[in-house]
Length: 434
Image (cartoon, rainbow, N blue to C red):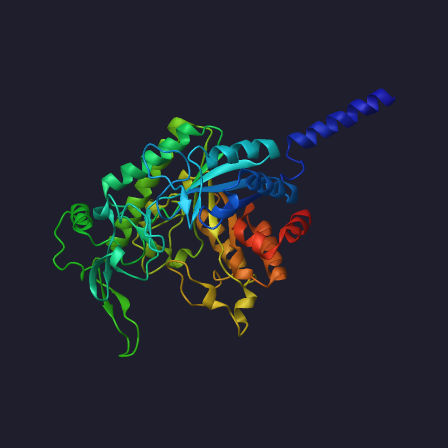
């Protein structure tokens, strides 16, 4: 009797397992390690190990190692890109392979390791470093400012100096770096693209971009750049604003299409060299205004219902190309309801294409919602938080993490430097254990 009962129970367990009544998989928890901000601390290999051990102990599952910051210099031995060996007076020995060491530590402490690369930023104004200053000044993006066309190096407000994504030689260069990383570090779990976009709405208005756009249109642009848009003041004391011209929507579509094709090539590069290597992207969640940077991270099944979108804009969506998408939910307000409070922290919105409105997506909850709506389950979504925005507000930070974990497939935190500065390791362990 007992034997028959045991067989029955075993069959019952196997049945429920087969139809999916299993324990939910633990959500992925990513710690981003910025190249510049953590340079001094992590130049010591023992400090790097202490970081990995600490990250694993509080519950992180993945490390994101930034190996190509906005300067375009890389943090590994490269035959293609210039290598960063000194930052703010702190030097690293040439034999120290930062990424290889991270992979060794990841294996030791059970952490998956991803490499992150800034793609179209090839210069840091504060550091005075980058190809746009050195060997490739002709690659820099040309901005259409209220004062006319200017190379980005001449626009003082720009800290990350972009190159022109339209140029074929620029794309070949960036793809060659992606290929080098995929080839030389097969133990990686993933490669994540960052700043794989245009600088902003004012980019790019170089002669090369004009020629490419005219080829796309199959006609000449009679008034360049005014047929795209003009800068106009609503009142004499106001800042100039973009006023769309007759070709504005087609220009937006064309830029997004160019970025889409780059993502096709980037994914093919990664998967050809290592089919097991995950291909990810990190971008802002504020989709209704993200067209300004020429990016459409949506599913191709999503038809944006916005005034700026051509009827065929959806075909530029690249979510289906991704193994995962990291959505920057960069807001102090956690719930949508908090946007009705009088002290909304609009001052913390400083990323490209962000606006000062109170639409639902300007909260962590709303950012997760619009990301899921736009992605339409085409890929895995990891909500991402900018820890600096919660300085002196640990409980607000905890609520933000909980919201992201509730709404998306996992959580990415930017950045390690703030966790150390605010001493929030215990807070993370407490949150991850809930």
